[in-house]
Image (tube, rainbow, N blue to C red):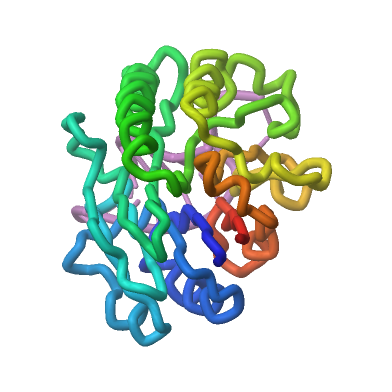
Length: 253
DNA sequence: ATGGCTATGTAGCATAGA
């Protein structure tokens, strides 16, 4: 089984790349973030022609998440249970017996922004909810754009990023909170190349200069982590014309 | 070097991303 997550930064723009990538990689399920498409504009026909079923929760301009899977996603839940959020950031479903949680964690903008406080509150609610979910589902995966670089080795220039949004102690503590309730960072279950990142700024030739951050993750419950055989980042997608600024992340079982 | 891109909404720029 192959699970993946990709922040597409507009599904409309990235649809041809997504369809190519699905044909090549043939994941069993892929979680998309920043679809930026309202549900009535979701390209369901194209996705189904590619052999995938889809569930989605979108809005225009911002946010938007979707789960695409070869088998029909079951028991779909929108959002974080018990947490009111107008922003479409979470969708969950069961695929091939695995509970799949697709998440787009808020960016936070900067430490002095209201959006940063929203991010921290959001992560607190997300973690509390996932604690309950992980007790309901032994085999559960949380995939998506976490907007947190967990450690300095996930940052191209730790000094420059020290204390900045995506790297701040409170954000890293929130990520460790997810580890603390039993999730494993699938990427770190295996030896990985130096300078492994999942996002690069569009500006400054950041990708070519390897100036990135690893902020997209696949977290696995203990039961799933034991079955995980590989985890990687598909940086080739960042070489495309008109790429997303994020690369897909993949876990194999 | 707090933005040098990119995408969106909407009609010349503003906002957001990370």
